[in-house]
Length: 269
Ligand code: HH2
Image (tube, rainbow, N blue to C red; front, side, top):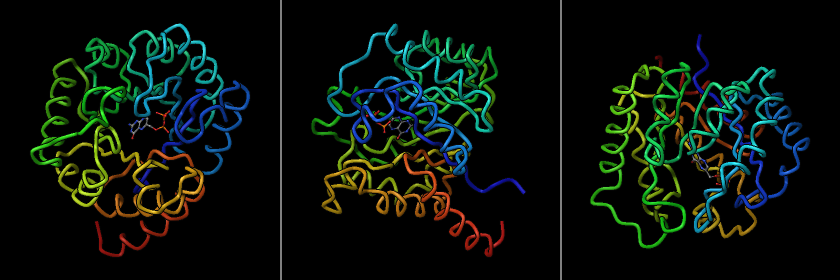
């Protein structure tokens, strides 16, 4: 039986990520961290060299390449699938050459539409995420008519673009982009109504890990203390039909989702 969920472990090779900036910036530390997460049950390792936290500044392609490619190359021989978290075609191309088979583009191929042709050409998987605007501006008074319907329509349009560019439907994952131009209320509504996004028919990725709205809800300022809050969102996400969970804390997530999946399985397929 296919596993009911996959965990995507986050490998941030950055000095400034919101929750673990600098912890894995050194190349060998990032590689060891990735291997540890694979041992803990990560089916996917998502390697990124540019923070997209609110108000962050872009990183030049040359620097992003220098951060990401050696880590992708080293992790390509692990049991996990290697994903590259980038919005730049140049970085994705080099990461694919180094062994990545999944492109996680937080702009849903809007930053560089040519990303779609690259993914199609190499038969890679892709994750298309929703973000309102760009990181520098996205948290300034985000507004939607209906947050779930608006994001569902966006993801459907982006997936249609990907298919038109030659990407097979079963290679496409969609992600509502928790925290990317959303208030706490928007994030909670997306989580609660996640089954509506699942109804699109694509694999749904959920990325809530340690995010600010969890800190606001629990009063936990240190992102490392948001693991239990993250786990709660992932349990809800699995129950609503998401199957890929992008997290910093793999072992805790694996335990919680194993128990959740075993319980849900009693209801049949
Ligand atoms: N969130 C972040 C980055 N990439 N990709 C997907 N598909 N979904 C997400 O929710 C998502 C993502 C932000 O988290 P993180 O990588 O921990 O932080 P930073 O962007 O500061 O490096």
